Image 1 (cartoon, rainbow, N blue to C red):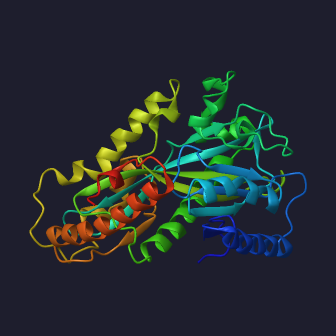
Image 2: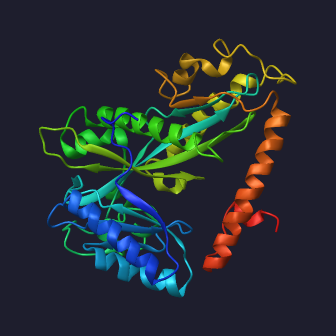
Length: 352
């Protein structure tokens, strides 16, 4: 890994089933805080249930005991087992005294000709989502800390015109010329590291040939002073990102993002049928063209990540994928049902 690139905040992936598990987590968090003392005046921990989304079962804590007390009812009474506990990125960069995060969009494609999987970051259609409540650092107010669109729209004073910006408007909002370009480059580096790590996992991240997917990655910026570049931290990657975050003013950018996705992932392959077996000529394949990606609105200087196919044909890749997703889907469904959390998405369709 490139140690000069900020990727994920320090944290722990844990299973919590009883008080003993909470005690083990307490020891881990205390040791982490001892080795890396938190920034005074800010929250220290963010605890997130792996099986939840839309800000559900997500807790902000200033101390280890606050984090454990917030998690305890959900874990021990509601049966939510899997958790991610991360360090809160502090101090956060602010827009007019309010916290924000960036939703970046990238596309994963599987080439029907050579079977290579690639991921490309869009050049400009990324959203900056700003909190309604001013940031103080002293409270656990969700509307101060959680800048998710679905959370912020619940505030009676929510104002889309003041709380949704495009990434290329960030320079003007913060008075820092060149900041958006720097952040875009850091996001590309962090996503490249994250995708490489995900692809190396046993189940792995592997887009299917003849398929594509638009994904959303959430980043937060750490304020390191006016004379230093901010830290750019990846928080999570979302399948099926909510495009409502563009709002009314930036709706045309959402349309352009979808158009560009089709120009990258579909149009180049319409004129020639996919071969029964993958081509071995990957270097000159249509999917490797940075110029084509650039003309379609994506960063064309290089793809985020690429991986060779696991099989000799799309049919063999699909058969292997069905086996893997069947196992993962049944496991995810069992996790949701055991936790009492509503099953959403394709895992809800997995066979028993």
